[in-house]
Image (cartoon, rainbow, N blue to C red; front, side, top):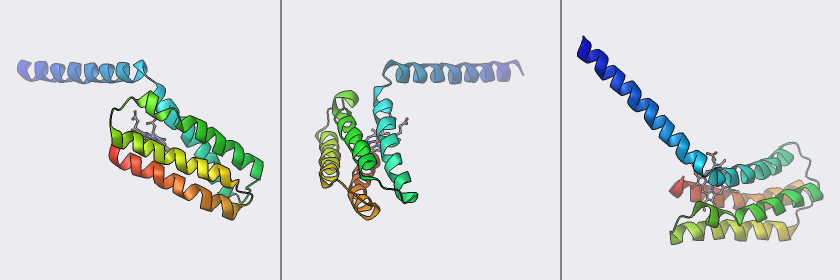
Length: 129
Ligand code: HEC
């Protein structure tokens, strides 16, 4: 009985310690998640606009530009020294740039502009997330 209790205690301590270490690690550098959350917000706003069928050119442009500048933070913030990772980030930048330049003025144009962006998000996530 005592041995079982000690084992359970050890297990609980292990779980708590692991959780602490993990949260300390992520608290140390909040930036990778912050960059993703920021991109997710702007991308989400574009998708909401599509869903609501309210695709004002100025709003779309604002979110695309915010997406574009935030995407520039991916490589320096993640610090993953992998060529394929920076290529994936570059692909996203190129696609966001193209979307911004296309200056979508209605929902059809916005849908066409953000689809390649979504693919770029997904293809990096499949490999690295
Ligand atoms: C170059 C690779 C790459 C690209 C491109 C990329 N992501 Fe990510 N993303 C990641 C990685 C790696 C993680 C996991 C980060 C972590 O858990 O610390 C992640 C995590 C996330 C998360 C979860 C964040 C959290 O708090 O756990 C969201 C949301 C997200 N990405 C959104 C996006 C969106 C939206 C795009 C496209 C506009 C995008 N990502 C493009 C690599 C990428």
